[in-house]
Length: 331
Length: 172
Image: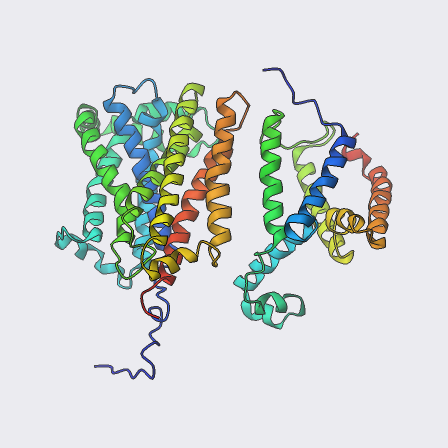
């Protein structure tokens, strides 16, 4: 056994005086988790509503991004682990009281389903990428289709996914909401970190995830009608997000001293400029102004508001994870 | 909607409004306008966070590395951020907000980008040697009746006329 002698009880690297064991991997994962939840939610919702032809990019095309970003997030999570080879041990237990267990199982279920969904629209995906500047996805999809035509088993899987679209959509709709909320609850379940310990974080992360999903869809949408529809959805989500943010701070300020001090980091403290300037203004208000102008008929390249919403969504998670680790009960 | 993208504001009116912008900047922040300073702060922040040991040894970066606050936490950085956002919104109002490279028909986009990058780099070096750029040394300097401000504007516009002739092939 290796014994260690501490001269001070406050000298535990990465934990005390400031917990700093979560670096870029966790916020990146929380961002892509929210984005994937948004993409899958809109695809399932509009499919079940019967608006497949009205919002073709949202239902048929954009969800292909979901498994890709989930895999990127999972890679980040595995990099974060001290012992990456033991990640599978999360799947040896179900613990209903642990958000991490919820997350692991939700991801375990949504990952294969999010692959099956775009697979069932593989011919539409091929058509979408045919006229794009980047030919790489088109070539990959064409190659995959040639594989389907060659092997009967793949063709059988494809037919099967097309038949099962409705049950997949129902399950995905539920799982995507769990995934979106869980990215926030993962943090809010930490009682010891006052900034995270608010019940608003779950809904806030869900709304922010849906908003980034809507931004990705409107960026990819080809026709004006779909772009405008998702622009409107996004505006509503931004308004809800701002409402939650204001209420989160009101909640902190009306709470205990540690929570007031956590809020002070954003109200004059070291995160003030980056939070209000870069996230709230550049990542929410500015794209909202652009979207409102677009609704009034001004010509706005949709990539500008879409990019800033995605930027804001990512930055929000980086700030929350970083600042949360600074807040504490011990003084 | 009518095409407004070719209509520009009267430059004399724009100049007067810019004067009010400088006055309000002094009133709100106690500092004038500046452009190059923000980029200098961004460079300082990048260097001090990527190569901290190096910046502690360097005369230029030392003060930024030792400072309690991040060097990016200055009025100029947020002012330039506002300039970018305000520019985008104003461009959208005028119907000119597009992602494109503007260049003369005589040259390619590539040539334009290369010369723009070269010009930008020279502008950065020049503003360091001159202790301020068009807005920092020129406009803000003149606003406080500083001789160096008037001198800077004279030299900037004078050399601008001179070098415009040398590089005229890039535009006409």
